[in-house]
Structure formats: structure tokens, C-alpha cells
Image 1 (cartoon, rainbow, N blue to C red):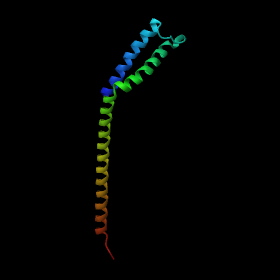
Image 2: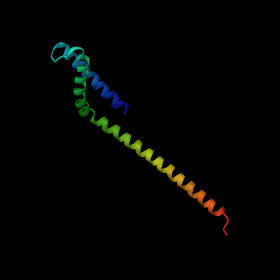
Image 3: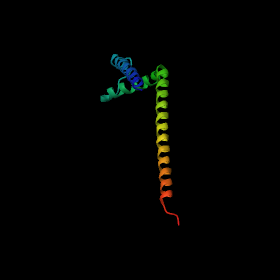
Image 4: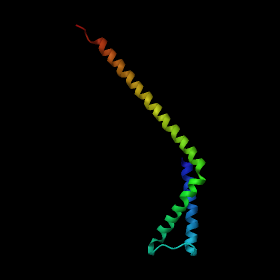
Length: 103
């Protein structure tokens, strides 16, 4: 997952440099007043999203498989703990049932 995130940040950084160059060379419009920095970041985000979607498809699939495996492992551990608790409660109930005097 970290690798995918770093690759996304790399694509965004590349787009940011390209957009910055285009804006300051006059090929792309400038933002109004003091909003030029925000305009450049917004354009870079808009450009990097579809590029990341296409270029990082395999890495995203690998990351999702790892996440699913981790979630399945956590679910299995929770189920194992739940069954251990149920066994302990059943054992305690049996012990209490045998220890109580019957009239």
C-alpha cells in the first residue's frame, strides 16, 4: 500500500511540475490574484487522477489483494477468539451446573 501511495504522489509531483511550467510559460491560464498556487495544485490534481487510474492499475490490484488478505486474517482471528469465549462460557456453565446442589 505504501508503494502505491508513493507512486501516486510521484505522478502528482510530476504533474505539478508540468502544470507549473505551463502556467508560468503562458501556455495555461493563470489563477486570479493570489490564487495562482491553488490553481496550479488543482490542475495538477485533475491531471494526475486519470493518469494514476490508468498507469497504476496493476499496483492498485496488488494492494487491494493484500488488503483483502489482511481483512480475512483479522476476521479469522476474531472468529477464533469468539469461539474461545463461547467455549469458556459453556465450560463455566457446566461447572456451575454440576456444583449446585440438587434437591
